[in-house]
Image (tube, rainbow, N blue to C red; front, side, top):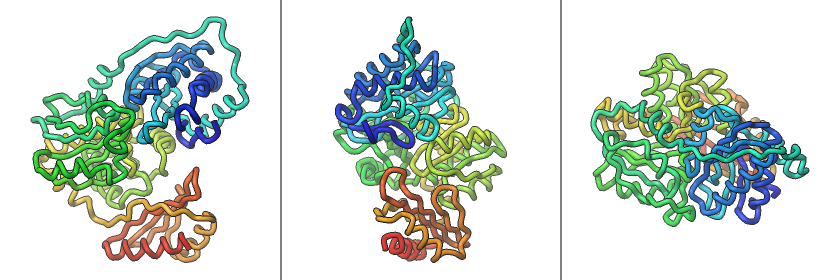
Length: 441
């Protein structure tokens, strides 16, 4: 059981690390910790997601909790169900982009507010380990089925402003994007599907658009020239990658800037968050379009909390999470796709042309380094770059007039992660190599 309780969710290999018995105990622990009356549960397409659901539901109902079973669902659907149905909490049973032998749980309290390590996962872990459950209730809770899809689809469709259908290629990666894309009507998108059979073994490729090699197949097909853009969903469809009509990857921070531009036309002057790894261009685009640009640390629990506090209309993360106030401050990859399609429809321009003016700088991408002594890395960097503007929102960020970089340590491994951007490709490469040498010294 050790090791399945992570910073943002619960995740492990099914049958050894995460068993039905542990799922049952987690159900009891969630009931003990949150004291919910009603609780939404959805699950992904992995074959063992149903036994995990059954075990967790048994634990919750034993404690008197009424379970609303939304069945097979994307992660965005589970968040929407939580808020829309006025539940006291929810869980989506999924291991996202992890290989098929993995499973897990993303847990929220009311209004789809996520529970992270600091706000409840550590408490749930302690309750499970110590078996410190509340007494079972004399009358167990009930389990009822609820299909949230029609309401979710209607809600997300209401944001579409697409004049005539746009030809789109979608790589579902055999995951929950197949359900998420039920939002799109024929009047919005003409979809050419790839890998559109639900299969929790992920037979074609890892369901992770951040791993650029997973985009090779969709990129090759886009190069044939028949589509306006491409979408690549991750395993539970709370993230999406986008490619232009030429098959070129559009980084997630550039998509954040595009969606912000579209949203700010509708909600002038609104606050928009971007994560600190994002290009300088994102802040610039938000401000150029009259918005208030706000930097956030990495991680959905932090971003959602900051959005609520600032009443921000939107946030985007470099990992492909797109958060909307209109979806209870949670992700909707379908809504992100609709905003991209809206812009193409409104401007009549191809995606490559829309992103061209936002590609102002040159980024390294996130580079991981395994290190023996994380603290020593920061000492070396602070000495070498003492003349930079240094701030500590998440790890250390170092800013100069023509380049910047951020170094963060992993929560779970002896890794540090570098993100760097500069005004020229030569400068980016030179600074990247210099800093990697310092990190790995």
